[in-house]
Length: 86
Image (tube, rainbow, N blue to C red; front, side, top):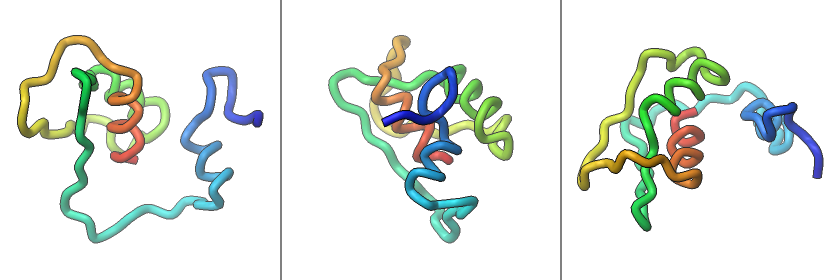
């Protein structure tokens, strides 16, 4: 399956693939993503994602609840946090 751009599969590609269009969820006050196997996300990576793909969230952050975050980002954890916040 092809798609996306030179950087890979993008949010706009996924929106088109799943026929979501510009729909945005409403009404949810809290969303959650959990991490396993010492997988973490980095705030700096999330900020880059927002800058590139979700400008409406530039400058926003995500609260971490529970265990302290590690210093090494995990691919799965980063993708989970990037896309759940979109």
